[in-house]
Image (cartoon, rainbow, N blue to C red; front, side):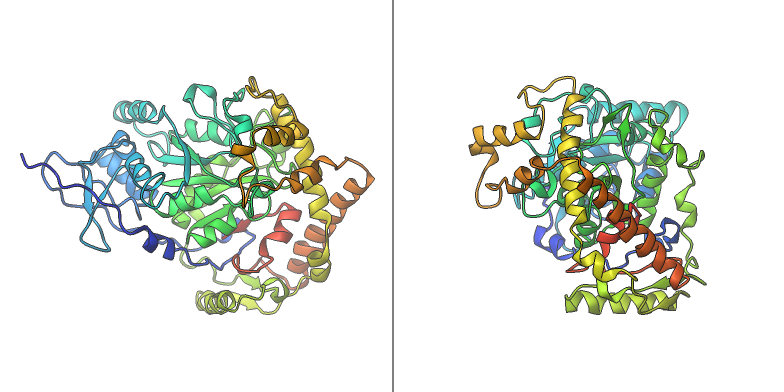
Length: 492
């Protein structure tokens, strides 16, 4: 039998060029209004022994699930490195190797060295095999059964998987969390394959130039995973989603604090949240449906409805008819290319039946732009949150216990942790270490709630009788700030 031709990755520069700003910023999750499915499943095979895998650059979760249900391929096929799985590229005459571990192998540490994935799950293949057997015996558990998903490297996973949870820091390498983060446990229960950990700026923006969930965004955009989970304190879901032409949903603020222990490495207990990053609205809605809902170990979530809605049912082509949307122009930023694209999108939205109130300014816009309260809150929360997180770990080989220890660890391991030009500065860490939970902190918390919620988003919605707010999520836009301090959702 003829040996298959070598599989080549498409030009990665073309993939990065696809990352144009997605400019719709919507606070209400149920206003997700249109589904754009990826390319169709491949229908031909080079010979009868080769699986008809879809193009992983574009394949939707629904397409992957359909292929799994039809027996065209298995979850093991999706995960494993296997050079016999190839499919004709839509862009050129090259063949693209079609398995997620293979895709990661091609571009992560070689070729363009994107470093989007910090660690692959050594248990992913065994998870996939078990889920394949379960599908055959009893059928799928959910729409995510057998679907590979990346998790950002600050989302805890149980030690039995063999993965680390480090926030990109050597100081937490080898540390052992006592349990999965609740979202990771929900993905497991739904039958998802935890493919690995997506890279991130070390300790978010505290050790790098920008604290984005870049690994989750890049990995999803170029087909290293079906989708990913990101986290956001202020922009780390919506910005990389925008830049990588993805749909990112930052849900309402959620604590992820289980029995007193935060299961996600924290930046701010008052602003951190977890959400999906995917190539379509339908994929993001499917994941959001799985990870949402009450947590029996966390009383904070008891305020949520007892039944989780199926967010996919909100995906209606006429979903914008009769909806009133407002545009606060003072927050749009100054990037003229972004503004032009945003204005064009507004006309599309009007054409879909929405009423757009433009402008619809926040009553306290200037105060939000000038406020330093968020910095006070997040810096103080970081100091408290890091100590709380580390105290709940079952093992910390480096012996660090708090933020002061992390600062000292970085100095002692400067060759790994203080690498110029971008990672030599610990001034933000030191500033956070010098904070105190005092009257100024509580005043800043109260001011943020007033600015972001009462007089900000709530006040604007009420003043203009709006259902949601539209803003660019890219460029110099301040779209994310009001939602961050209010604890309100964004769809990018």
